[in-house]
Length: 350
Image (cartoon, rainbow, N blue to C red; front, side):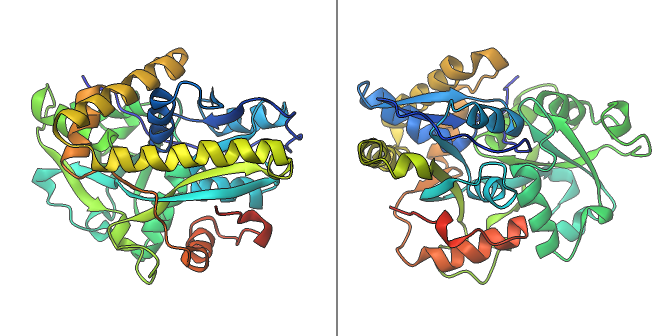
């Protein structure tokens, strides 16, 4: 069975300034934003960067509080929430990546086309080691519901670690058969919120393995829901973010490291986005191996075949050429998703 990766976010305290290092220390959960960094590090083993792997938002807060990280790779809205909630107030956004790949994966038989079709049904929001509640997957899920004129009161949402979620989906078991779900949720899940390539992996699994009800699909794409923004195409959103502590950016020598790593990151994002045929498998293998190497402690896997399928089918796209005019729309988008506008000092786009 394909093992799937999603995202999360949550809470802690304040951040201590990071001590200057000869490498940039980037905290990251196993979400798609880390893929270009894995490729960049494979292309240039001397790149002055190291990954600080974390399982969830609580661990993110911990490593910054302990001064073990200089920057964070995460969803832009996850980063913005860290700043607006004063968890890590010194983070500054230096990069935003436009990409597509957030979907509500549903059963083909249900013919789900929009969120109103899910009213009153059971849904799952997941993270790799936790349920993702009040984290990145939850932020964008609730914002998508609101865009559709709904709230979590209109659906039955259960927050589960991804492998527990897959078990319920495979068996079409009632949500309340899992102790983490509300006991009154007696219906099976009709959908799960996933990013790529996790969505591709689950869909492939539903066709090729022992799902009791075969055939899942991307019933709803999140990206086109967020209309009214002109700085990006309607099939993309500014999901991708790299943020660096202000104390690091204010150090001229450290700032040089940031510029070098960021340039390599952008180049790798373009490489992922354009890789096809045999090049796609090569890139996919690098990503798969990088996830295994950096996140083996969490028993997470991302098969290269799943990554390649998402790439070549155009389901997972990274764009590193965000327009210079993005900040106004980005600020409105982040305010919509997290509920509070980040301070002007948050934006340090390069």
